[in-house]
Image 1 (cartoon, rainbow, N blue to C red):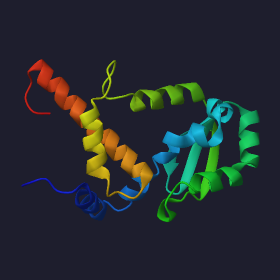
Image 2 (image 1 turned 180 degrees about the vertical axis):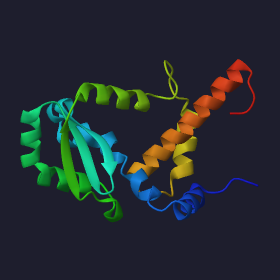
Image 3 (image 1 turned 90 degrees about the horizontal axis):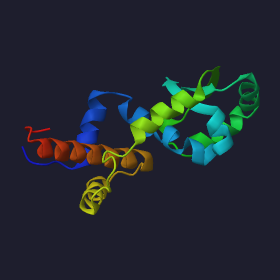
Image 4 (image 1 turned 45 degrees about the vertical axis):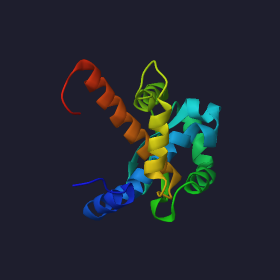
Length: 165
């Protein structure tokens, strides 16, 4: 079987797993949280998980919980402006916990697939080319990351002399 356009692959996955596309496009919340809400809020509040159409946000203490509860309508409007209509969030719930630990775990996931080295330009160009037909910017970015992670794994396996990735 030859290569298929990424759009047809994603459409097939979406058909077999209802809700997958919606949840995948919601990943933009984590990616843009600090840029949208600011550094001060991001240090004291971070998205923890999605439960149906509700976003659970971990906050550092009850003061931040109260402040963000008062701003929840503005935050919802802001986040939803970056999501497709079918991926919109209807509710935000705040829970107290260790925000810095949650942020660190997110940072580890987001670290480049090529630790300590620059991502080769041809990999970046190929990733952009493969996902150019995807309209959702959040989904497009995640697919680029997925491709780069795949190429990194393939490169590491090749360097160590192991078989296919």
